[in-house]
Length: 153
Figure 1: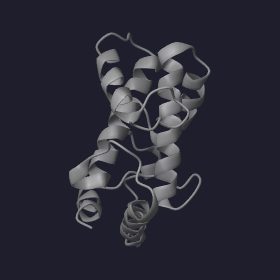
Figure 2: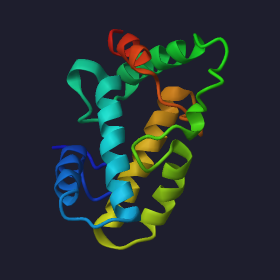
Figure 3: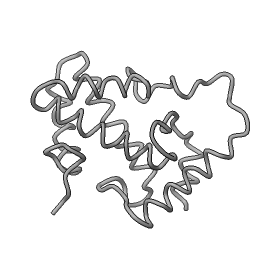
């Protein structure tokens, strides 16, 4: 049996399937941005988790190894790229990392599936914060080459 996805009523496989289906039925607006953000972060976590993909949150030694790899790769960046403000980089076409955190709060206040997506996103941000070094540290996406180094751990 799969564990719940944070405080959501859904587990990770159920959430991924449900949200992918909702993508085809949701209108424009913040709800759709939440769907796109969720799918983009799942894809990002697929790449971080490597060959196994993201179908559960790593814990214990698995999480520690992944966190160590992420933090090592992030520590290699000696000076920021002046042409790229990673904090403001889009996770998808509509939402940046900062805007995504605000969107989580908005979605959680909504009823039904929007709330469930918000709860799932909150769990994803919390997990990514843990991998990146603590609360609020998920403030940049790793570049493709950095993701490959992490996945090769």
